[in-house]
Image (tube, rainbow, N blue to C red):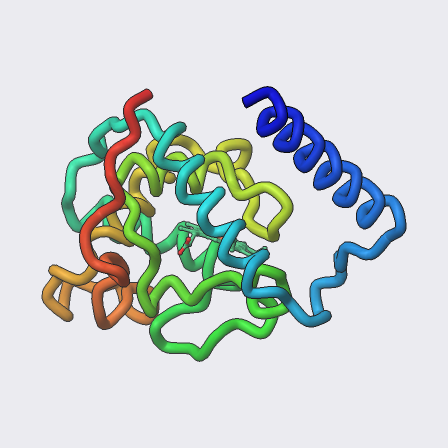
Length: 184
Ligand code: HEC
């Protein structure tokens, strides 16, 4: 048993040392336009999803779902988000695609976040990517309005959609059910 434990500790130490050497030798790629490993993308999306599920407080959207709030959300989206995330009327944004990871085209659908997860993500941003923390630029109310827009646009009749901003198809449930609720 002691030998197994010693072996495990030594293996772990060797792995940490290798990671340190690889990092110190500058072997880790950091350029945005280089080739990207699938492993890195897979690990990062797992880290992101798990962190959002843990940190999002699980509130419900306090902003009433009405046309004024959807219109306000669409206006803010157009002014603040569309340059990276595009609109239904336009193809992917060249600017948004220049990041790594690229800014997804939100009108085409996005990951399965609950309202509060989406709110938390938008308010706090995503570290080491181009996604800013909007909490310093938008009020909570404005962020909730965007959440309403992103979550409900699929169910709106076409005439209620502020032109050029709301997606033609659903934004959410690209992968099915909403993510499991955070417990904090
Ligand atoms: C300067 C460019 C930029 C702007 C402006 C921007 N974002 Fe982002 N956003 C990104 C990038 C890049 C990512 C991808 C990060 C990742 O995949 O880890 C992202 C990711 C996201 C995601 C996660 C999508 C998913 O499927 O996981 C959401 C939601 C989001 N942004 C919403 C917004 C909203 C709402 C606004 C406006 C208030 C906004 N973004 C403005 C660059 C931007």
